[in-house]
Image (cartoon, rainbow, N blue to C red):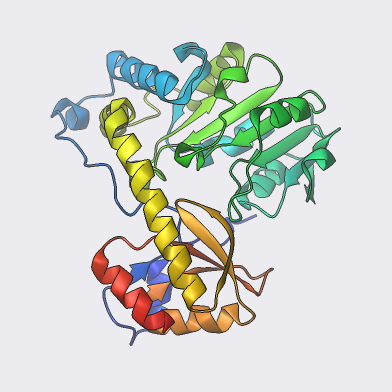
Length: 323
């Protein structure tokens, strides 16, 4: 079961459209195009194995930032993607239900763990599953559920995994409630902070589950560079507040641009917008020929997902291409 198609494959786009204008504008992901300014890193971050003090600082910062009960509830990992199959195996092998359509890797990971996977359209359809998965807010439509609604679901399933990869932009976090029901929360660092290449993510769960996950990951799972960058960024509440405001303004600007071009915006988050148009494939191809990569959906031929342009030049090129 190979990884499924995702956004961000500029190499493939360049090969398919060699005559497209350069540089390419990548709007195919939901990654913040205004990344956190990486601070100067200590030489030890490169030359020594990561120390316990650096990890403790990161866990404290994540506990504060995400509202977890304590650092003992938080596990740092080299991206949440690496955690999916292990967490899926925590549930008794049986039926895994994934609230869909959503990020396809959750269903793949559940299958790898031996579950019979069912993709369901409504939150209440998750009841009775051995493993249930909700992406909140959802990718790609931005569907958002309250913490109380998710807690109710958790009490009807064997294990509920809530992927809050895009929750930094707004919504009710479930991180503080992981002791109240069988819940594991996933938090992505790279999307909101625009540093996907750092490969840093977190699981928030009960201390016993957290200790089990640390045992599986082993020592030094997170690089010294990621520990320093992550802690500094998570502690910077001023940057986070300003970034939320900037992303919201950019998302509104993108909505206006798409609507003005006759493309209907039907959902999303401040980091990406989901749009529909009868000829989404044709629009995707047209934009690729203009050196602009969007995210199509083979199973939904009328849909395209748009990330945010990163600078004024990119906005102008998108505007011109949509005209």
